[in-house]
Amino acid sequence: MTLWSEFEIVLEIAIARLAEMKPLAASIVLGGLSFGNKPSILYSLLVEAGEQSKIEPVKALINHARRNALVHGTPATEDDYSNFAFIKRDIKDRYRVSRAEFTAAQFHEHFLEFRRLHLAAADALNISGDDIEDYAKAGRFGQQGT
Image (cartoon, rainbow, N blue to C red; front, side, top):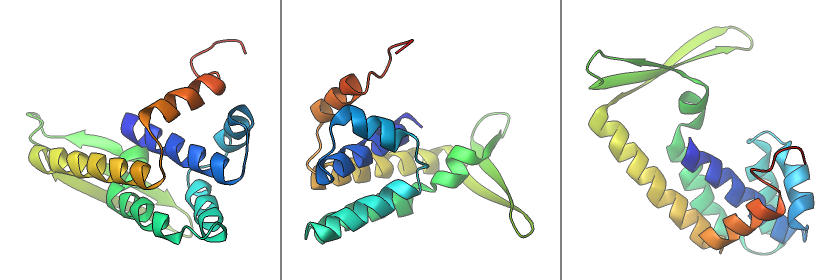
């Protein structure tokens, strides 16, 4: 989850740069958007800037992540934690239940690949750990009562 949250900040920084937004304004505007809107905005801005090649690393990460199952799913585990699943319920036009199942080894591999794709996407967008820290400071992350 933490790595996914960091990826969401990477998207916000890329959008802010392309849209020439100040970091605090970007944090205010983009922080209120659902995740699904951020890649779409980024893709449009990248196309307008003639930087379409930067879209594929972001899409690769999103396609690998299984975000909805992991973020919105309810975890269910074996007693020894050797196998587990994330159970997701959807209620749109009808009720649906889906399961994302993993062994501990599979989930570990899933995480390692997610991390690799995360680094590749951040690199393609020219965003470093220092950029993330600067954005967090400008957005007043971690401050109370502001």
